[in-house]
Image (cartoon, rainbow, N blue to C red; front, side):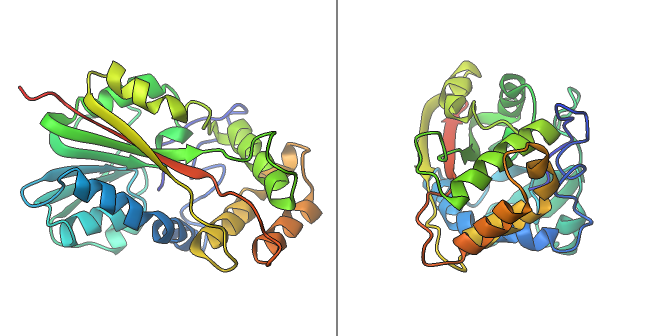
Length: 272
């Protein structure tokens, strides 16, 4: 995922600018570690909601395009419009039925038509005005269409045992919030926000991938920490030794921790 720009508390730039720059070597691989972790869960939910032949789909913040391509190649969707603020990774992996659009969904004038499916994963958590954006995405649904949103839920709260992992995760969330405005605190309100946008048959589920040495999710977090290290150090909650120790902890048999959960919520636009 490459989210549209959002200025953080220090106006240091948004996702893809202050941190997680797409031109930085290895950024596509970092995104793909997340895809390896979550794509099967995402696609199982989209299949269960009926995504398939004849569907026209909008994939927001499509990143490297793994979900977009699977909608076409596995689900048999008619077409997918993959939208991102930086589309270099999408253009590198073109496939039949996939249209790529470089755009910023936070633009009040952003419009693309109507779709049977509107999907966004790990996008809105980095953006301001969640109520407005969710309502705007719902407007892109055709009657009977479904909006599916997934974002992170922080499970490293004050009640979690103190470990090298939890210490660094706390610093990461704070550093990203200070730098680019990432805020996962409101993610549990997704079901309410979809209902407020006029959607029906709203439901939600959560997936917590296991942290195992060498697993895609462990490699994703280690790489994410390296790329957001400056923001983490600026919080004063950790130093370089703490970050290096957490990376080693993730890759050891001593690791006993919970990854952030992925909360997925969906709702349907009433038929005309």
